[in-house]
Length: 266
Image (tube, rainbow, N blue to C red; front, side, top):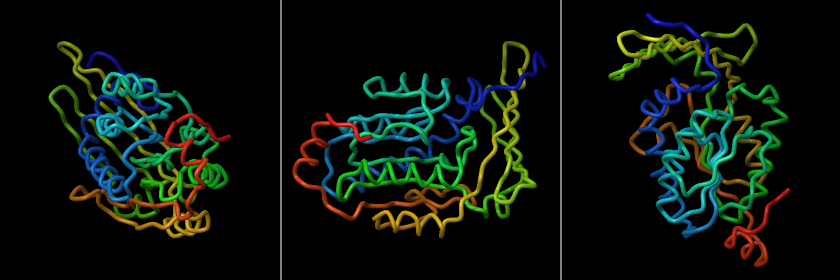
């Protein structure tokens, strides 16, 4: 063993590991979103990817002809995303504070709304970002996201083990003393020449009640369906996905602005 260090959230090592391990879910989510966009005849325009990670979804959407803007708090993730989808635009910001421009779709996959990387993540902050998403979407626009529910700590395995050619990762989910919170202890052993380097990260998540969230987005003006799989690919145990459509139709002026990707909502 050569070294032992604690990394930032989704630092270099874990970003590359996540890029490999999460690829199947991200690709399946892309399939679902592209299918929903085509069914709604939303064939072009801006898509905002909150918590865009390594850009798997962004690349797929850009390849379909959409303008893509990704937001993430991990510098390492954004470097991967920019390399994978150089035609997309990426911003190093908190998804709870970022500006969301007029969009035909907004997505936030991979428990993005649960992570407590941003200490401002609470019920009020989540309500504000949901409101901004609703404001940004044209009528019929799509909002695709998933969350970790209280079942995440109850039903999910307490420990997981992942292995690639050059890395082994151990993940332990720990119940917090604070209600509706969990901690994820992650230790990665990454090959570094003849040795392995250990990199530790600790992720804190707040668990979100899906019924409460469903009520919130209904009140905002979304119609939605809940699911536990992106197509044939199951979400992690204790996670729930939402495929939502904005109900009200925009006026012609807003449609023109959306299609031109020229305006930015406050």
